[in-house]
Length: 251
Image 1 (cartoon, rainbow, N blue to C red):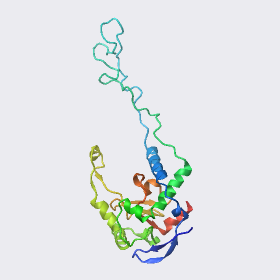
Image 2 (cartoon, rainbow, N blue to C red):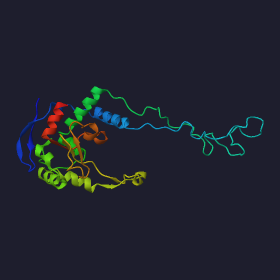
Image 3 (tube, one colour):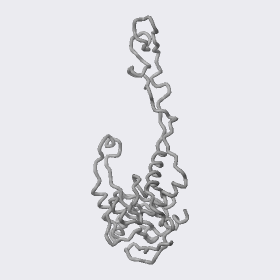
Image 4 (spheres, one colour):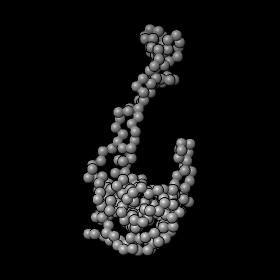
């Protein structure tokens, strides 16, 4: 069944109907969405392991039996223990192995269904609000904008459009929710945490919205579950452009 929604121009005025791709009618499958997100997250990990000879580059040898001392390897011309795990500078007992499998397998058909389900979840107002997003009561989801939106080049112009269509409250929520991260990450280039806000899906590279608090911009051909359901939680507030829907339909 084809669903039609009103598309809006940059002034928030309705300029006609646009047919949504069939993917927007996919049943909601939160189990698959979460699994797809976790699999993608696992597959981004980089394998790592200890040097094969770490802690072993030493002259230490065990004195053997009959010396009246433990069989712990000791450095030549000295009495310091080395090589063994419980010695200072010794090898690790069970170091990380580079050959360990850190990724996660996921069926292609299940991954495709998870993506389609995550796309459909962006149309459910109750689910989007339950996720914490804030927008005006009269906003109908999904929000589809004319192709002229992709021609904007300044962030302030995007802010004006969001205020007009009733979505700017979510940007303010993310901006006000920005805070200092707990833990060691503060000293590793990720001091601040910002809540996730609007996802902009366009047909081509769009730079004007990339500095909005919590917002992400992605092209329709690169869209994936991690964009639509951050943390594996579906129902992200999403703004689509009409050309992006055409690209999505081709996918």
